[in-house]
Image 1 (cartoon, rainbow, N blue to C red):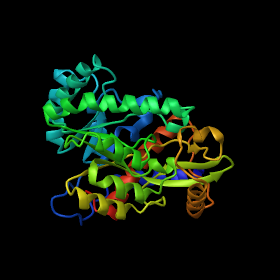
Image 2 (tube, rainbow, N blue to C red):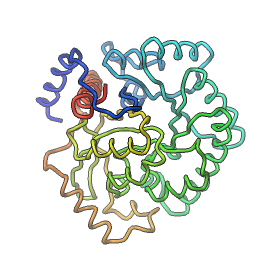
Image 3 (cartoon, rainbow, N blue to C red):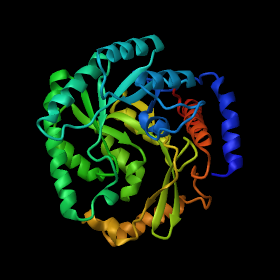
Image 4 (cartoon, helix red, strand yellow):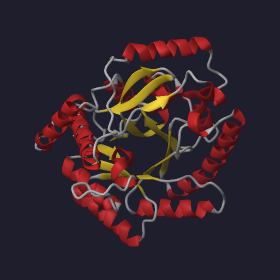
Length: 355
């Protein structure tokens, strides 16, 4: 990112903090509050960067307080390790702040791990959580697997993990929302969901992830919206490079996604669905779809589909470099993370009617 762009963005953040809430035009029955996913504060949670101005988050309570001060109406945060005191404090804090809390949880990978999973579900529910976001894969399909056999093993293990989790979610009457996390193409995810046909198993619909799997964003939304419990709303920019294309989250309204169309489509299927910003501040991701290794786990994408998708990328490459954060000091990167989240919140109010 150019320094003048960063300075402009951080300078306007202070002004944005005092901006009034924009009028809502969302439909009756919808939750007008706009939340933020834990990954939007990746640096504060996971990079352990020393900073006085932006210290690492130590608990969900610290994230809730910070996000409430910025103006967010909810958070999606990990429920791992919550004891009875944390449960009580999270419940009281969300009630006093008027925020919603969605959970993040790891699927049970074997029968012994099911006890841990149920304990975390119970803790989250006691704290007021009714939707738990989860993933089958923590990485990226084209980086984690070097052959189709390994991916098929992952597919089987994912089915079994959800099969262990479903009775627990049903028992406690909470929703388990599996994210399209650069692992499943939309059709594969629909096949996975169809194996369970459970009111307790659905989707955390990420509006940008499947670009990395060569799928048009709106087509993914159309496919998964009927099964969506929660949303990671993000805008995306793309940039060609020799091995394929680069992919980057950008503040809402600055990318090429039809966010209003996506919001309308999702709300048509589930008027009460909650939307969480997931604006990850980082260097662009490489999607090396012109290298042999990328194709190790794909057996149903033909050359015509690849050519058509690369044309789609070229159409939306503005010719301007995507934002990058490497090279900045830790404090500058941390400040930019806050600025990107706050700028996206302002755009969510101004352009899309959230409060």
